[in-house]
Length: 77
Image (tube, rainbow, N blue to C red; front, side, top):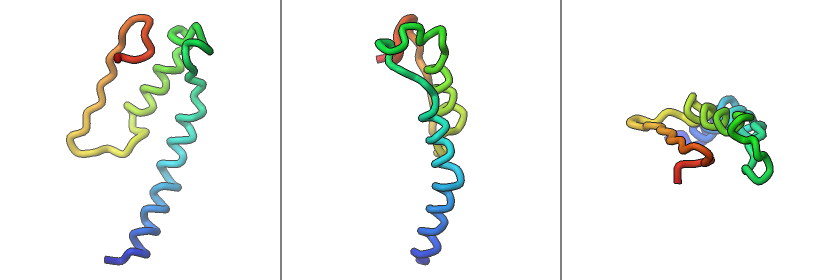
């Protein structure tokens, strides 16, 4: 196994796609309802969900993403 080549490939993938996606995700001003009482109306949580649902993570065989919404709640559980 070419560990040096593998390490380089992983570093390039990390820098070219993963870091950019994480930075974009962190820039979403998705705050706790204590800091943003209008969180539902402002839609930042929906933007955060969409970011992951639309490929922020690398696709995995058999992976399924499901978002459950409860009125007035920031998460399902």
